[in-house]
Length: 201
Image 1 (tube, rainbow, N blue to C red):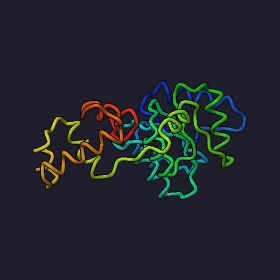
Image 2 (tube, rainbow, N blue to C red):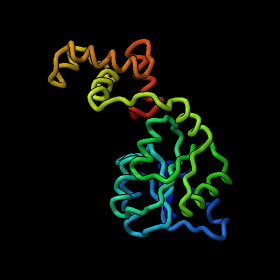
Image 3 (cartoon, rainbow, N blue to C red):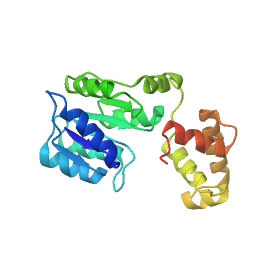
Image 4 (cartoon, rainbow, N blue to C red):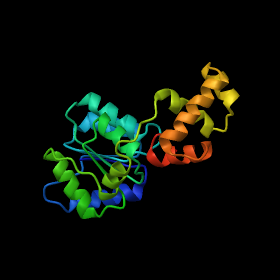
């Protein structure tokens, strides 16, 4: 197994838990996404346990790179961050399962075994998040581009200039974003987009 997390204490705790299991062994550890990909390429573990918020290369990028190396790679996401859009992106990129770090050690070990056996495991909070927003519209790439710049404090005119479109077009896209996220204003929209994982922190 590969354990990738930028917090040494978290890695050590997980490695210790795994070492107590007769059917598991830690083949490699990584402190960032780039190292995770390198270690996966070097060791070809049966499963990769990946955090999402890591330096140099985030977990989503690492998942995509690992699946490029091995299309059948088993990847279990273990992260602090829920959010239906973030979860769906991870699963679309090839993650088998998605758990939050608030999960018990027993649940994490059980999820790893299930993932290796080909069964998907989503934490209870994760399933609740997905159910809450089931059927809601996703944001388009153009809307996300506008929202990213809005999150950086740009006004409509500045966003329009940056994206090469009119200010009216930007206003229209922001209205669409507010409607899709059920947000009261652009600040609220940015907050909701971060919570749901449309925008990364």
